[in-house]
Amino acid sequence: MTSTTNMGKPLKTILVGLHSLCAGGTERVASTLLNAFAEWPNVEVHCILYGKKPEVFYQISPKVTIHVPDFTFSDRHRILSTLRTMGFIRRVIRRIKPSVFLNFGEYWNSLALLSAKGLGVDVVVADRSNPNKPLGTIQEFLRSWLYASAGCVIVQTSRAARVIKEKVPKQRVIEVIPNPLASWPNASQAPKRNEVLFVGRLIPSKNVDRLIHMFAAARRDDWRLIIVGDDAQGFSEMGNLKQIASALKVDQWVSFEGKQRNVAEYYRRASIFAFASDSEGFPNALAEALSFGLPCIAYDCDAGPGDLVVDGFNGYLVRTHDEHQFSQRLMELISDQELRECLAANAKKSVAHLENSRIAQDFLRACGSV
Image 1: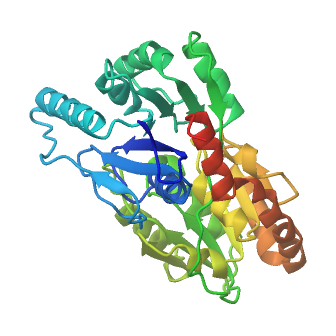
Image 2: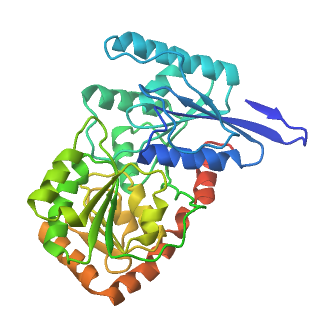
Image 3: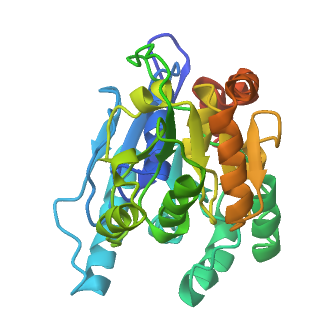
């Protein structure tokens, strides 16, 4: 919907859709963008949450109107619940008449495109996955069919853009927009500690179990590994990780902090960021660590880390699953404060282009709202 404000300027209504605003990378990006959109002149912002657990973990501006269904998605009656969800999305679109419907999530974009059919709203989809991640036969078919009808497909890396172009040759508008950095207004100026930090969901692809092994090989008694994150996506990793730390006799040097709302405090005081994920779309935690001036070590997996870490400039890229090299790089940083400071000096400025208002403007431009 395009209307007119009292100032005579056009008012754009943007509807942002996703399954939830729980703790997670896509959700953090969406919350950052929602808050930035809300501060944009003459943009009215709505958010629709339609997943199984449409919770809100992140702080959202009161200027954003949030819509949630009045029913619970039932796996026992999955088809019926999916149809009810589609009906809910259609009702919200009819009621607020948005200028554009921006939806997040590779598993949810097809649902959004189907739900909006025939309503005359332009749908923009943001694909967040590793470009080589198999989505399953049905999801891959739906993506190849429905993405062609999207007004624009937003991806995080140039590699992802090439993959989408191959899979959806009829889609001509593909925008590469990296994730924005979160703003941390209440982060303290904490003194640095001898801490190696990991932030992320405790799921197998993050390889936190192997990270504990690599820390054990590289550690000194005055250094600790701090793990911020909790079990997710149906996995129960925490108990196993604690057993590994105990078996390696490093449990007194490994701290499991669980899910934390104020992650900034951990970034502030850490000295090194270690990231052993082997599957990423765009690793938010890695970008955040660089923004706090942390030298980073990461596996050079298919997409993501190579867009952020410049080997030898702001951190180190390691061949995926090369645990010996990862441990060696970690040992070098633990042992050499001058090296850490040199890489840290380059880290913060290397992600200046990810400032959230700049990325929000890029999203709004791709949505035709600026």
